[in-house]
Amino acid sequence: KASYTNKQGETSNAQAEKITYNAKTGEIILTGSPVIVTPDVIVKNPNKDAFIRVYSNGNMYGSRGTKTTFRHVDKKLSDRENQKTSRKP
Image (cartoon, rainbow, N blue to C red):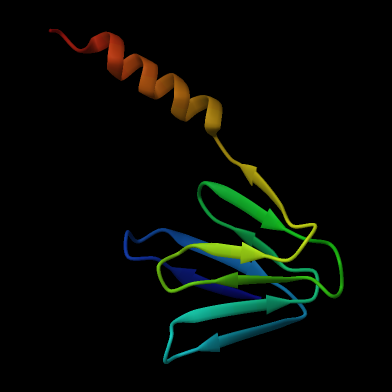
């Protein structure tokens, strides 16, 4: 298990059989049933031979079978719609 904080101060949690951090590139590689939970997204792959690579800019790449679930999408969309209707021309 590991936790990391991005430049915006948001904490993400990661879990896998093996987690490797490359200090030179800033990349994190999770292998063996990896799961990443961020404030906005859950990324996971239940396969033992699966991996997820997190690049230093926050982008992620997962092996075949990796699923992404967006969290709080309905709330964010409704907040965005409320912002649009409250604006005056």
